[in-house]
Image 1 (tube, helix red, strand yellow):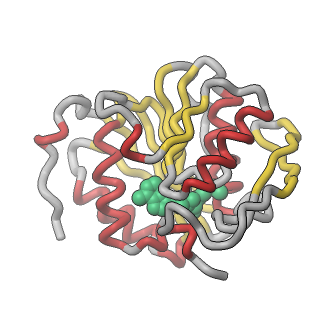
Image 2: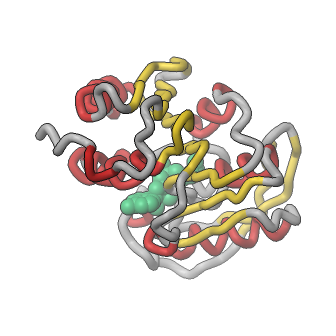
Length: 217
Ligand SMILES: C[S@@+](CC[C@H](N)C(=O)[O-])C[C@H]1O[C@@H](n2cnc3c(N)ncnc32)[C@H](O)[C@@H]1O
């Protein structure tokens, strides 16, 4: 399978929307998907593991799905927290268009599906749920997490699902070392070959981004 959807703003191949029925937040919903995005045939196993192991998201404020694809995680956040604003970010424009269409199909007006640079700098997140793009490479992934995790609010949590065979444990060690004393990193669940990592802002990180230690590698 081509991996170009991970890296391209405009994936190759015609944009043909296809119907998809899935269960999100306990509801069976009719959505659309398309080739050129991640897991176009349905819910990815890692995404399923994440969604079945996270506690309810914050009921209000700003929530984030980092790397939204066709939107299963962002839509779940929005269904569970209709009074929150859900930021669904991706570099793949087709993924963003699918997420927008799927949010509209569900009558969800609290989803903002946008490119990463379109999220205002002052937005801070109470809950982050993500199946992050591991295959972009270790350094790129670390840079991505360094860009978004410091935007967790005090007491906010990020929940990340990562396959064990794609480096979940080394990512956990890196997060621990990188954010020691600032973010508390723990393994919340292990299921079907995936880890769900919990990253909690426990020390007033918000607004103090420049004081975070420099990268360790
Ligand atoms: C593992 S997929 C998860 C997709 C979707 N959340 C799901 O669960 O099906 C990771 C997503 O991250 C996106 N991505 C890659 N690089 C990114 C970046 N720098 N910023 C935001 N998203 C990115 C990819 O396009 C892809 O849609």
